[in-house]
Amino acid sequence: MGDAHDSSRGRDDKAKGGGWKREEAGEGVARGQPRDASRATHKDGDTDSPVPANMAVPRERRACGAEVTQPEVRPRLRGLGARCRGWRTVSGAMPRAAGLGRAAALGPLLAAHVVAAIEPISVGIALGAASALTGYLSYTDLYCRFAECCREEQRLNASALKLELEEKLFGQHLATEVILKALTGFKNNKNPKKPLTLSLHGWAGTGKNFVSQIVAENLHSKGLKSNFVHLFVSTLHFPHEQHIKLYQDQLQGWIRGNVSACASSVFIFDEMDKLHPGVIDAIKPFLDYYEQVDGVSYRKAIFMFLSNAGGDLITKTALDFWRAGRKREDIQLKDLEPVLSVGVFNNKHSGLWRSGLIDRNLIDYFIPFLPLEYRHVKMCVRAEMRARGSAVDEDIVTRVAEEMTFFPKGEKIYSDKGCKTVQSRLDFH
Image (cartoon, rainbow, N blue to C red; front, top):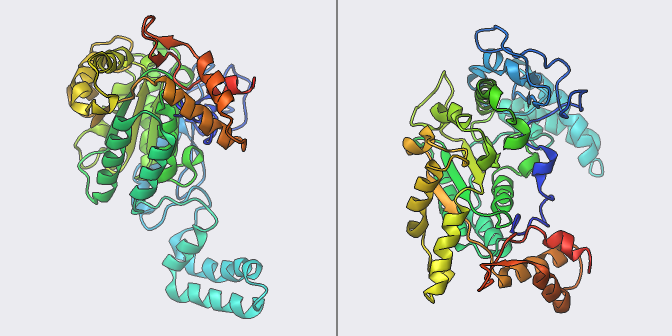
C-alpha cells in the first residue's frame, strides 16, 4: 500500500528528510545543516571541498559516547564496536568500570516511581542490591527500558511480519512472499556471509515506501524514527552531480560509523532512479563478502533500495498475463527478476546504471511491485477510512476509486498512480 497505503504509518516520511539525523535547521538552503558545514574532514584529517550549501550533513549518534557530526565519523568511530560489544545505546555513555556503582545508585531512583505503592525503601534497596550482585547485565537491561538499545541478537517475529504484510499490502503477492522469506532467513542466520541487500522496483503508489516502513518497524521498535534506521532521499541528500566524490566520502563515513555503533543497522535509499550514477558504488565494499572492512563487520546490516526504474518492464509482464487470461497471482519471481536486473543495469536513469553492485551480484533480490488494479484501489480506500476511524461507506469507496485514472487507454486496467492519491481524494468526500 504505502505508496499503496501509508495511511496507518506516518504519512510518507520521505518528506521529512528522515535519513540524516539533524540538528535544528541552520541558515543554509537546506534544513539540518550543522553550524559549521563549510569544510568536510576525511579519514586522513585533511579538509576537502566545501560542503554544498543545500547538502544536509548527517549527525552520527555513537553508542558509547557523545554525538559526532558525520564528517568526523571515520577518525573517531573506528573500532567503536569492539569497545561497546557488551551493550549499545544511542546516548548517555556509561563506562563499564562505573557500571556497578551507578547501577546501585540508579536502581532505587527508578524503582521508587514504578513500585512506590508496594514499599519504596525496601524495593529500592532490593533493586540496588540486585544490580550490584548481577552487575553489568542487570544494569544494561534496566537502562534499555528507558533508552533505545541496539539488540543485535533479537529474533524477528516472522508471524507478526507476515500478518502485517498480508493485511496491509494490497496486490503484491511477490513482494510479500520474497520480503518475508528474505528477512526471516537472514535474521535466523547467526553468521551471514554478507549484508542483506534488497532492491524494490515499481511505479509510484504500489507500496515500496510502505513496505520499507513495515520492515523498519519489525526490525527496530521505533521504525523510521529509530536511531538505527537511516533513510536517504536522493534528491535531498545527493542533489548535485558535481559533488559525487564528496557524497561518496560522506556516505561511506556515515555507514561505517552507524554500523560500528549498531551492527544490525538498516539503510534505506529512496528515489534510486534519481540518484546520480556512481554514488551508490561507494558502498560496494560494505555489501561484499568480506568478514570485515577496516575493522568493521557489515554482515548483519540491511540495505534497501527503492526505485521506479523497471516499472515499465513489470507492467508489460503483468499486462501480458492479463491478456493471456492468466491471474496476476500466477506471476512468479523468475518471470521478472532476470529481466528487471538487466533492465535496471542498462537504464541510465536507474541509479544502478552499470553499477558494480549488480555486476558483482551483490543485490540479493530484485523485488517487483505490480501495478494496482481497480479492486486494489478500493482496498486502499477502505483501509484509509478505517485508519481515520470512519465507518466504511461503499458508495464513497466506489466514487473515490472511479475518480482515479487507469491505463492502458483501451483496457483501463491499472491505476496510473497506484494508491498514492487516495488520501487526498478521500478528503473531498
